[in-house]
Image 1 (cartoon, rainbow over the protein chains, first blue to last red):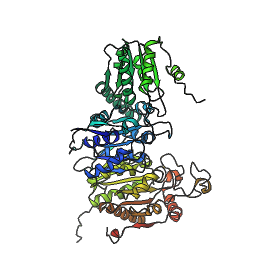
Image 2 (image 1 turned 180 degrees about the vertical axis):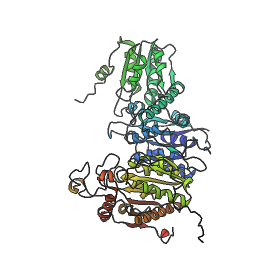
Image 3 (image 1 turned 90 degrees about the horizontal axis):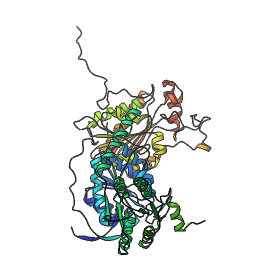
Length: 371
Length: 258
């Protein structure tokens, strides 16, 4: 396959097609509508299922039903739409059917705006629907990575019978850059032994998220936790840049991680011993790797397009071994490399202290308050 | 001399029902509705081709009582879930079983659009004018003046709105192929209800679009009545508000003998 100039949304959609997605259900919402539009043309021409649902609530429940048949299924949406899907995602988690969701995050809360944001980190990584479950969350920083992680998300969802979410943002979705699509995979011809397909020549099967006896629900919750522990042990993914001799470490995911890399390269050219760790799986989060880094560095700088949501995970990993500083832009504002470069310079020069909330000094530096 | 006649089975559990004792209250017509569906699946030879979608409400455990593949939906979302199944497995028979709160209240969006799309599924709609499982609150189908635990002085339509007539509403959708209302309050009506359920599944089998059978049903426990009084209450109070009728029957179904 040759490299082509591809828009992120189309690239993720076509990557899903080539990964063998059999059914897509979605609802238009900016900035991911191109995924739905692409699927509306591509899926029928391949004899696969495309349906524009009446709402995100319906879309995720259509996905739930289709996933129960053992088919490879997905939806895509953006922040407000994903909020509406939370009920369905909880049921999907409670039934252990594999589902892939692409969330192209936009500015919020509420209707917010349609600009790129990482404000839904807590919702997608730590929150979600009701009940006790985790989803795998992959955060791409380029169109190529968006393609690769979309394909991977299907494999992970099926391997662990879980939800795998590609959490992109408007930058990744709308940006065009050269990337290579994978070859077309064949659609599986068999169905898993838990799938509901009609009880032809076998006992009837039931897929449900009900465990009416608390003792049985507890056992199921424990089972989910054990699956999650396996995922944590086997599926943590991250990228490291210039960490070998780094005295300062920037932590950023997705778009912010990529912008931070530009800043880190410039800082290196200035002689600042700084490196970058970019979590690719923000769930499971690379806690151990950051804990290990914390033993040998003078400080961390977390950069995000939110008010410091991944920051809490980094602080948990660092566990007071080193100072953790924060720089974020919010509401759909994307930081420039120069802003992060200034922060790297500051962190490398100023004496750092371990504070209870790194946001307090960041707010002062940001000087944006509207009161 | 009297010739001995060979014994003949005249009544037995339909193959499509499991032996699991159900959780329904004495006098509740859920059991009757379940049996009618199971008899139809048996007669049409569909048990191994059918996937049911259970709702949230008293019939939340319907999947324990039918011996066919089943999934359990979120409250009101059964038509969306059924859509997902049917689109991936178009040659399977897919039905939802939903109560009035599930379908006509929280699931109003999903049921309207499944009809608008002419989704080739069957919905069995149990209208007993009350929320059963949560203990007798007002439903969208609660009658004007009817007392429930959340309309203790009776449903005041000025404050609480009017009953929703789902069969009439769904019959206006172009994607609907077979939309009727029947009642389960006496043997004659039960026989007619079974015929309607058969026709609904025939509609789906023939790919003629969306089919829905509304069944007026009892809830003796939450109505505070004996089973017999509840049957009478359906006939005297529900049928006048919810007339038993064929609201939409495609020409292709007319004259079909079942």
